[in-house]
Figure (cartoon, helix red, strand yellow):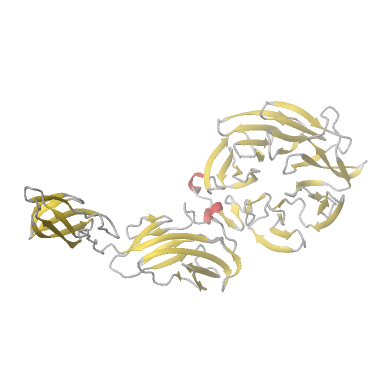
Length: 519
């Protein structure tokens, strides 16, 4: 007989408990146009484009649960940004309207728009401030006070391609580009210090010329900026070192306009395209590639930095190379199920039924992985092929830890350790009766004594005791855990019979000696 421990594993990139998205029955399907994640890492937003409307789905990345959908029937949304906690949305539609939506109150409004076209929207990582760009101007809007507080402009280049905030919200960078017959190619990016900028006459803190044309993004530490550099046939991502004021590395691209994202630690850079390439940001070597059915144009790291949300397929949101719809979605990463198909939670109990031991099976999705390491109460074992099973477990308390690996013998990529504690009991075990210690008492002048019996030491390892019966010479004299009985002078051997909730019994005796009163 098996009880099942279900471990969710996605391909050779393992989804940790935090990011197993569940409740997909309420989420949308279709082409994902854009993705955004709140700076807190708690909420993921996805824009689904449909013929008649645009739907924004929101997921809680701490629990993995689908939160809600917001349907914009009359708009075609192209960009999304989230407030720091993910409770408010900044949206850009195809008519160049910037929309603000509070999902907690269900209210929203237009906060900006222009006929000349808005290129990007960004929400400050730590405040109510948002920025959007049109032409060569960056507009700053405070969603708390509901007012435009200023704009950033310079004689840089009259076309802002993209915006990005530094993680502390102090700096905002813009990537600018234009090309025409007279002026030719013009590219630059600039950074503004939001704490010191004069909104009446804003001046960039620094400008880097001859680099620009697309996405731009600060790394988490704020000391590097990844900049798309459009060079007509030789596009590249330039990694600009802010401290040393120089380009320290370039990544040559085949794609026209890829999307790229630093992971939360800044140790890797994901670059989208027909394949999503993962670069180590110390060596700039490619350490992993993720192949998707179509070229991904939107990517976001999971907050643990282990996986990539992307739109690399026609059937909705992807995690790494797997569509969300194909991932087995369960509300718990680990489950132990008893004979009644009831889930035993961490710290729960499993009952042995007509057996002296049980074997737990670890199930994975896909059903075959490189190997599964199982540790029970500190004793390790490795299974290189399914079924991944524990050794037989008898009655006792257990701590079970499981790690799945992409390669045999616990090698390769690993899932997060998953530990659950539980107890195995035998429901057929009888209770243990305890009638208490022998007593010697002195009778009253009436020739008898009032004696308190004590069966509180009785126990039942797999349930509860439901009945206590006290007898002498097979005659019932009392019931209950600690009854009082009147006994005459003499030696009394009293038997306690206890019955548990399974109907099983046990007995114990106690000797009560009642001595004559010397008076």
